[in-house]
Length: 247
Image (cartoon, rainbow, N blue to C red; front, side, top):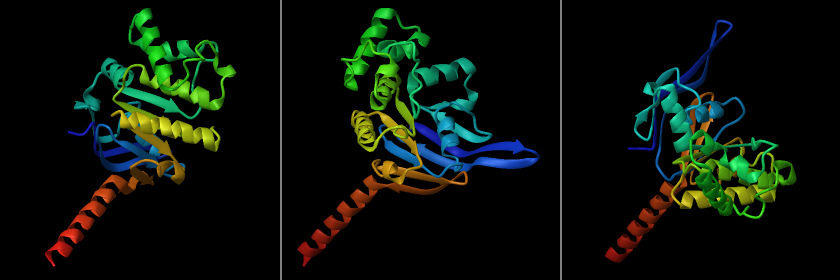
């Protein structure tokens, strides 16, 4: 069973008597531990897809399951629990609270989870060490660079040990070098077994992920899985070697 399962999902809006399909009959599986990207131009439906995958919105048609739970049948409180415990979000504009320091920003999701102060701090410190910000604990966002603020946002996404992390244009406000550092951090999280999904319009960003899902006009236009391509090449090489040995 896939971690995320979408079956014939559509998202339909009605504007001025016109029907607009932001998503149109999308079927998709995301396995646990995958590192993949959703790529498409502005207005293609990629952000709508992320919102539905992340349980921030509901489809008009079709079904979505996350970790075996059918989202449309979940109550409001169940959805809040799923978002808080199973999903981490990282956004382009960081979304840090300016009056809170680094540790306090990272602790926020755990406050909503009802976790006690001592455990909140321990988990926040551990997450900040993972993103190499253990020396900036008392700084406020205005005292950090863009890359450091994004790493704080990633630590905040990690503190509840989510199964899946959604990153929406996570390098969009960063210079090239800092963006590469952030992408390497996502690679490391994937190697640790977390499911990581990047949403981007940039082919160079999408190219770092083993699987790329291209969406256009609300439909999945193309799927590229370089892991499968690598397996195909290995199989072809093995077959060629076996044929040469037979001769």
